Amino acid sequence: MLYRHILAAYDGSEPSERALRQAIGLIGEGAGTKLSVVHAVSAAPRQVGGVAVAPPDAYFKWLDEQNAAIERRMNEAAGALPFGEAVVLHGDPAHEIAAYAREYRVDLIVMGSRGLGKIREMMFGSVSHHVVCHTSVPVLIVK
Image 1 (cartoon, rainbow, N blue to C red):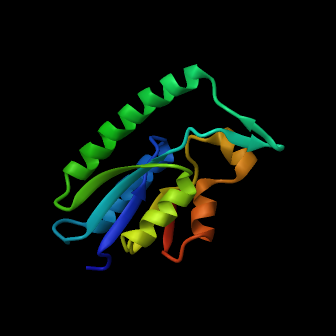
Image 2 (spheres, one colour):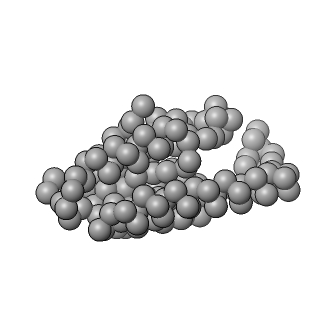
């Protein structure tokens, strides 16, 4: 068994779906590796140029719908594995993923190169870049 615990970051995007499939493939059949499929939700106001920007109410409705679909897919993937779990975290995705990896002794983080947050990425940098920079755990970026 190469890895004891793999974290697959998942946000419903196609790159995160490819990363999830890659993580499942790394586990193989009956290897005993735990897979945590992790989705981090952040709807907190953002600082842009010193001004707090809060999303409109329609955004929260859309976010709830997206999160429900994401959680269904995560539970489906994790439920198909003997040692799979779906985990929803609340807060900044990059920070939460790195913190979860530390706390739960993850051996490998697998994530897509791009997620759903294109505007956020332009303003704050990609989640994958932040995770790579702020964790000591190996990170596999899937394109």
